[in-house]
Length: 179
Image (tube, rainbow, N blue to C red):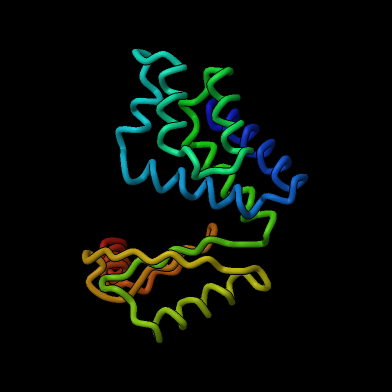
């Protein structure tokens, strides 16, 4: 239920931002909020806590983002407080990002590799991701997972390309078990 509500709030804020020609600024605000939640896992717990009054939650959010967000996002904080929905702020940011990316023709791609990719390899992975999405813009995010042993896993939308050694070993194991 909260995802659906978050989607509605995200769509409304995006529509207002587009109307006011502030969608890029609001997108940056949403990224700042998402980064803040990622950096401090306790923030979401505090906003979801029934022990705190909504006015206290509102003051906390205002204090954290004071002078860092557009008026539109500051008004969103107030609206969420009035509607007792500050607990879904983090979900709203992720829904907003999805809607914004859809509107701008941006596809998020995640590459996970055993070691950090150098520039040449990043370019090759980016080219592969671009070939999968056609004329859309690719936003590439890199992650390191040493358990892959070697190679990489590329996720673009619903498509996953696994060239990792760990993936190849799992595939080989499945084939041997089936025989």
